[in-house]
Length: 125
Image (cartoon, rainbow, N blue to C red; front, side, top):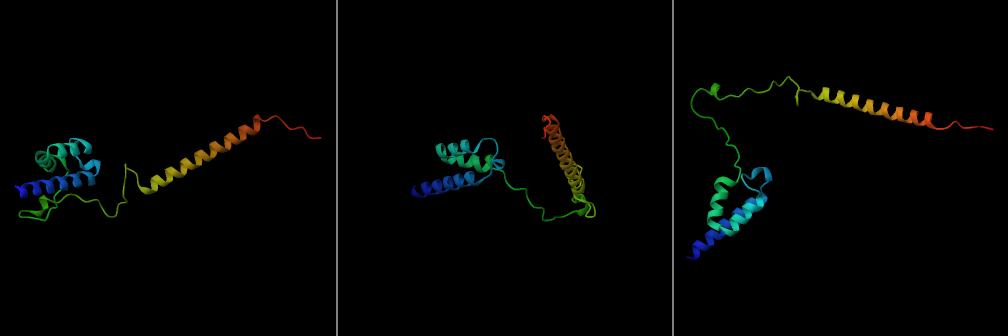
């Protein structure tokens, strides 16, 4: 009887530590606080639910197998091509940032010139 209590306590402790250390994106179906309450109030059932449906497991690593390997290969990006994000290369993004900086510099210059035009003329003696 004592052994069952110790095993249950260790299972609950492990589940609580696992829930707390997981990032929010790795927790499925309920928020982390709800999982913590389920594990505390329903120890055995809560732990079983957490480890079966509540947490996100890592995707299994393909270690090879039988059959034609060409069927399992996924197309890889060409190493000669620059990396693209949202259809743009890094050079395109840098050029876009340069244009944006130039635009805001011109806007600041126009505001400064407009401020000079709005000032009343100074009378010199």
